Image: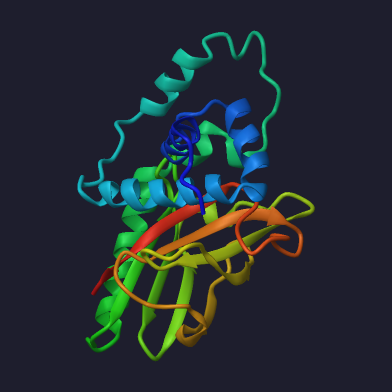
Length: 234
């Protein structure tokens, strides 16, 4: 596989960072399914950038912070309403609940650890919205046992648009691409054997994407990433 061009690599980095505007992001996502080079660039930037989010402690936004941000971005919103956007593109939905959702999932993670006897090769991943940081799901798994995907945030309860579906993926660190783990129902837990995973280890990527009904038509995601996170060893 050829290395991506500098321009394509930069677009992939901006996509993972969430700095593309809506039109640029839509253009890249249309190109992504047919471009193995662009897919490789996106996965490489995910491997580089996502671990950085674990280096800084979470912070609870000050009351009214997101309201002030929205007011500065759209100061005349009430006088001139902007067109309604899909729920997965709304700033307030993904960002406004980030502090509370992350706190809730961390509390649940502690309960999961306390409820079961300690064992080797147990892992936990908190899946968060890639841009706003709002947490929606927790992945808890143990070698030789089961993987459990648990909804913990408000984002996990949002209804899925008609004709679309949530699809669950994993990608071990260093793997060429992700592996589908099946479809997910909004706000419903999922259990499956760990043996279905291609591998199991630390910093393993898990993500939930928005796909056509029935799942992605490819062996890789075709829609936007809604939640993403990496495993840590317990």
